[in-house]
Image (tube, rainbow, N blue to C red; front, side):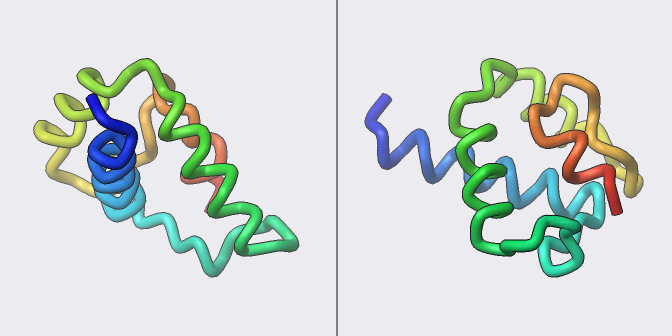
Length: 79
């Protein structure tokens, strides 16, 4: 898979996860919004649970916390 395609797919998943958990990046506790976002993107790009993430997002219909397998769960569940 090409890098650009992987980035597009992972950012799509990250956006879905943020919506599913109602995570508002502007309310992040991190002092630097830009740095917080970059860290989240990096974690998502390097995640090894893409298939599990897609399945979870496809079946989770209610607003909920991010699952334990998500490398951004701590961040997304903090607000």
